Length: 207
Image (cartoon, rainbow, N blue to C red; front, side, top):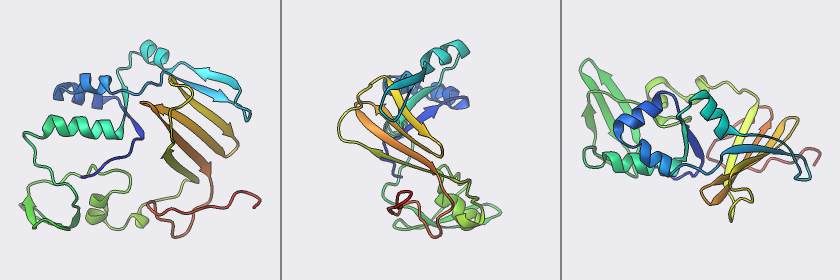
């Protein structure tokens, strides 16, 4: 188990009810990001529009809350550490299912048997690969790439997600609890052999 990314995620829908029943909804709200709206700017940084997302949530009766992955993981860990066994710094390498359970092989820990294995390990799921096969057999490129990275220092606007859009490209600065997070979204054809954990520089258009 490992999740140190500071990217924000939304706890919404049934997840809000689950968090409430776990007794952690109050802690999630205390750790919520500070963004209450979105500001759209032109290429000179001038504001050209905006959305008050907090007002929209109130009008719609939404109870969702946005927190960083780091805070979400820490809060869930604290809530379950007295009754749940955690294995840090390890990963599954094989699953073998039979009529009575699942034999799990780990990279470091000794093999163990479980009644049920639930995969909740994100977009590029190791559990899914082990259970169903390589990701390449199921992924279909939708023409879009997304990358995020933390920036040094706080965001200029502590209550707004700032977005600059142009055809096929978007950049955003999110005020994630005192430290700015940049998000880059752009349209591009599939890059052969690109791995989601490999850093690779893509030449700018026209270079």
